[in-house]
Length: 421
Ligand code: GAL
Image 1: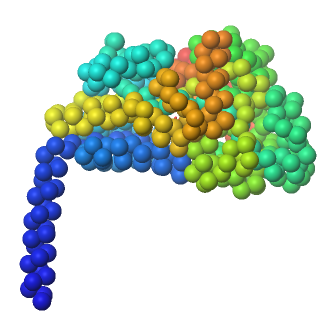
Image 2: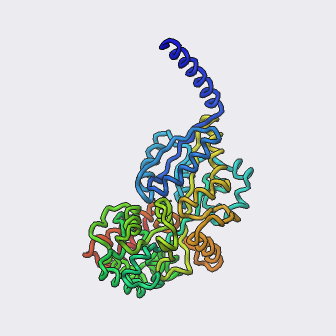
Image 3: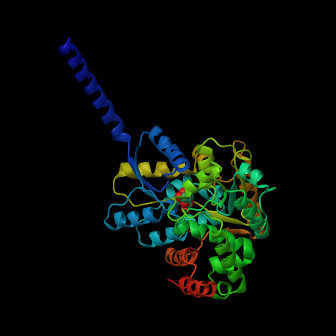
């Protein structure tokens, strides 16, 4: 008996081995570095893995925890410097140009031309994905950063009628919420989250032109202006409505405070919607979305993308090309963005499966592209080079965390940080 079954077993293993070898002959490995580790994020990236596995490739997950991606960027650098890059890395905005200028990125023009990316992407996005006219990266989505999220039950219990449209309304609502015994603002105290809130406040207080001058072109006049003084004062005032346990908290834990009805609001990009959705919450009923106070006519965009590294193995190169094509494909663009909270970056996609927050995002993306209200997010690597972004982020976060730093002092420090090359 034992003999028979072990014979059967070994025949089976030979068959399995033969099959595996056959698949391996055509399969390539894609190692993908990303920082999508929260509930909604992990669900989203799992869709890409599924698509690649269905094409017969081997997915090697290189996930580095840490919202906003600073940890991932550090690890990526050490891998590339040691001559062992992954196939693809989550790199975006001006950082793509920096990596490309090091000569380590692959030219994706063959797949980009075959798949007609130029006609499928907004030009502003396609330009960011190219280095010297060649595609070196491929975009997955459009996130909007200037959102505020809310728990409608908490608003109701506190007697707040609707989402605040400006900072007067916001602080009036926040006072009522505090009085009713809730945390008004769920905040995760990490420097990139402080910066995310700050960017929305600067836009809401100062308007589009001010945001552009101060946070995109880094004009010292705008950074030293009275408008910036007001933005910093407003930012500091918001801190008074957060809870003492905020320092160090991850962003998705802050989202879950809103979900659970412990807190009323969160300032966060629409990856927060991915968390609500992953928890089975229904937009408009269990949670509300609105443009952050004062920013209804603006849209700070954050386009996630993967840059592809030069690889030696032809199988790995083939898998990399398939990955790039899959990312821009309609199947992935739909299912990924439904989970991620963002909208497809590929133009002319049907949005019938998307909710009202996504539809508002899509409408505002188109409208603000015409009005000039469409602006790159500085807190999410879209607006300026990484060195200046990091320096400004540090100043903003130090100001948030240390009440002894005056507004005037912070403005001086911001001017210096903005000059970082
Ligand atoms: C952003 C990124 C989003 C989201 C968020 C939190 O920078 O673009 O995709 O993952 O960080 O990790």
